[in-house]
Structures are given as C-alpha cells and as structure tokens.
Image 1 (cartoon, helix red, strand yellow):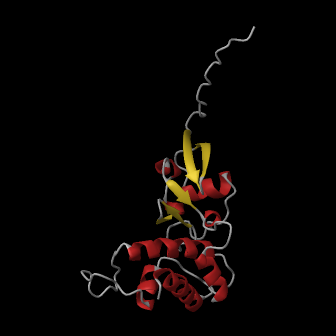
Image 2 (cartoon, helix red, strand yellow):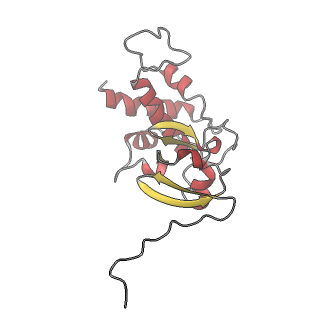
Image 3 (tube, rainbow, N blue to C red):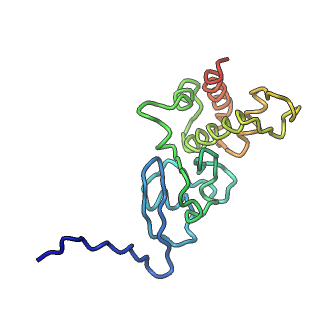
Length: 188
C-alpha cells in the first residue's frame, strides 16, 4: 500500500568534478550540471541552444558575445556560468517582448547591420550602455564628469560602444540606430 506521505526527492547529485547550478535566463530557470570552468557563452550556446550570443574572438575583444546580467552588459565568453547563479541573465532572444525591442527596430530602419553576426552583441551592449548613461556614469569622452546631465552625443555612443567590433563597417548605421531608439526613449 502506498504511503500517504510522499517521500521527498533527493537533490540530483552532479557527476564527479561537475557543478549543479540554477541559471535564470530570459525569465526561465535552467538547472544544469556543468564543468565549473564552463563559460556562460558555452552554457548558452552548447547546453541551451541559445545561439544569439556569438562566439567571435572568445577572448573578450570583439563583444559579439555580450549579454545582460542584472541589466548590465557582460562579455559572456569571460564569465564563468557558476558565478552567475541567482542573477538575471538576458540574451538577445530575451530582449523582445512579443514585438521587436525599439533598438532592434531601429537597427532595421537604419541598416545597422550587414552580415548580422555582431548584431546581437551590439544590441545587448547598447541596451546596457544606455542604462549606464541614464545612471549618469561618465565615459572617457565625457567633458564634465560632475555635470548634472551628460549629453547623449555621437561621441558618447562611439566611446561607450567601442568594445563591440563590426568587421563589415556598419558603424554609421549602428550609431544612427542607437541615437534614434534612445532619443525616442528620452523624449528628444
């Protein structure tokens, strides 16, 4: 006769040398058993088939793998997945909410991409960059770091996006798209 009290399930035991982690990605919890040395980029692409973040240089130099962690831009190739347990991770797949994010629409409108390989990282980086800007964080080209407001200029955009490389040379369209999307957001 079955017991009226169900036996609690034991937590799964990860294989020797691996770590059992819980990651919240694009609003969905994922329980994974991984080698603790696995980068977030490899978890996203190889374990979860989230191929939006691209493996470009895999050394933190190109920005193609940029994602958002707690709404801040992060190079996923340089981040260990085990360090991000309990944090909110957003990839390009999680940016749109039923319709294109305004920045995605602006990239299309201003032809901010050519081959598109760098585009997911560019868009995630721009969203994180704009949050930094709104928080009043200065960049290397900010004239008066004590000013109450920093002008959202082309120079600020170019400096803040300098960690993301586009080998097609679509920088003019990228800068125009960022300006267009975020000027609308701040009501210019």
